[in-house]
Amino acid sequence: MDWFIVYILIGLAVGLIAGMLGIGGGTTLVPLLVLAFTNQDFDSTKILHLAIGTTITTIVFTSISSLRQHHRRGVVRWDIFKTATPGLIGGTLLGTFVADVLSSELLAIFFVLFVYYSSIKLFFDSNHSTKRELPGVTGVTFASILIGIISSLVGAGGGVISIPLMVMCNVPILQAVGTSAALGFPIAVAGSIGYIYHGLGESLLPPLSLGYVYTPALLGIVLGTFITVPFGVRAAHRMQGDSLKKVFAVLLFLLASRMAWEILGT
Image (cartoon, rainbow, N blue to C red; front, top):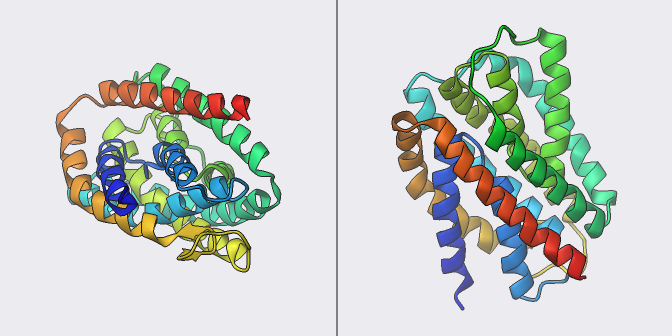
């Protein structure tokens, strides 16, 4: 099997999701890479760290592509981005240190629980208007640190947390989606640095790995995402976001169940 073609196909799907929902696609990509790496007989103790490191590095590129498209439509809240970025970077770097000392089993369990939570949150999330407003600088910074830590542990761009939080604080859904695409960039850059650093010198990694980043998968996925992100953004501005989130939530739930089955079977 030509795995580079598989990675491009995965990138096509992830790019569409990233554009539509303003997330890096990491929550979907990690389980898919775990399956791909397992079928390539990579060392089982390194698979999840490789999947997360590779995923969070792809988000550097998907977030840029998605961000540009959303910015052109004027739906990125740059005021939120500027306030949240320091906390996101600090939290993400801290999270990579935590991930480095966790066993693969604990990391897998944490990831599955996180995906289950995200899928349920997305499915039942309501877009009804509330009287809540965004907190001040201290509140946003604290929330950003937590988002950064969780994102680096599970390889996500933070959108599955930040979008519901922004919607709860009365940020319109399209602005939440566009802003989430921007927030994914500092998370991904900090996370990539952390996973590359902690993986350098590790034994049992496959050839062409850069730390915990598997470069053939990175290149293939990035190529695919560049093609489909613009289509995803257009779809988000034409379709009901609530319907899209429910479909995505079901997909997340099924992927988490597949990983949970594999954990229980080991």
